[in-house]
Image (cartoon, rainbow over the protein chains, first blue to last red):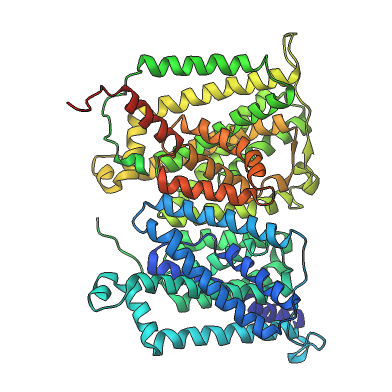
Length: 290
Length: 334
């Protein structure tokens, strides 16, 4: 029983990371109907930046904040340079651009920072197990950081003018433009925010899985699964889905299929959701005009 | 994709003397290559043929039918493993493994194609991407270890030339692969130029209109997926024979991505684009190495993006445009 509770807790901890990446995916999907296949690689690159800063002696939290800002800027730049010209291109072209970005990011990460596996520092006390030994200090801290981030993003979208404008731009670009929202910039900001969220998620997961250029490949898959499970049209659903996938993954890995098939479980979740309830648990069914 | 802007030809397109001549010259050059190149270069050319078949498979489902697959590396891997296991465990001659692997891959493709029916473009891309990421883990799994050899993989032997032909085994392997390649291309050409090919493109361009015209979309889409998986699976078999080795870590998600990049660069909805694409993925990593020793992947990514912006119909589209320009009667100044 203790083992079971432990699996649930560490599932929630990794689930928080999937939830963040899932949220980043959903934000981009909602505003542009693109699925960013390079999301994981972008986050890995940001994590490398944080690693370099910390190695250079910058205090952890300053480095994390700086990484967020740098990633934000990169996200905005990518939207402006690569995605803007593709706004009305066929789906195959936009998928192609994301695959191109994925190749560029993995290879540049490996080129600048090397392919050796690195241990990433954690600011949390890892010596003492917390909550009666069910969860490590880092897991607890990472969950807290993830939750703070998710709540602030919610507050940003709910209570600020800019957040409102971004929601409007995603919901109805034409009308938003008519009332004076600069839709193009809102999309770019969305990209920046998604890249920033990804960077934090990367820094939170790196102490657990170690840092190398392919660190996020699996995580992206779980995030996809989470986003689909919760409903890819619903940010809250994506977050809940991310947590759920973390728990399912841990319990399934411990009791059902073994750790070797964890990634396959993500694949099974994806296929199951898409065949049984394609709109996800909280998403709305999309009807298209013919 | 962009080929959709081309007016659909309702009759089977006639074979122009020029096209026939081009194919013939290409074939003669390809066969002649067997006797002029070193064994290493022949191996590279063998892999070009292998990739061409694999990309052709991908382009049937993605380029012609509009179902975006980012996971064809999985079918490539399955084909390779079927051949390796049959040759290693049961000593089945290499040429008999091809039909088996074609059948297995077609079945798997059909099964994947079924849920794919419910998935619009991006969801399918996502699911197949997940398949591609998960496949090395599946191949490593201990339940399959007796067959797949786990992480170690399987080593197979290079086949000798039959009938006492006076050529070495590399030359024979190249010619054999080339022969299979020709058959596959002929099949694809025949499939795509006729009624079924038109129906596939109709689904890609206007699914609703296609349905209204009496095309059974579900049936055709799953069958297309199966055929496409079969092509790529056969390529995987040939690739395994050529490399003489299969292991889970040779079939990472980057195989699928390479095939995708090759398809786009060659021209997504073009049969001959597959050949361009195959040359691209076989030789450009080496060239990219020379451009930037450190980040060849970045060079490939940049080339991919540049093609999407400037030549979305790929090399095949560029060639078509060049030919049209050359043949156009000079009307300037008139």
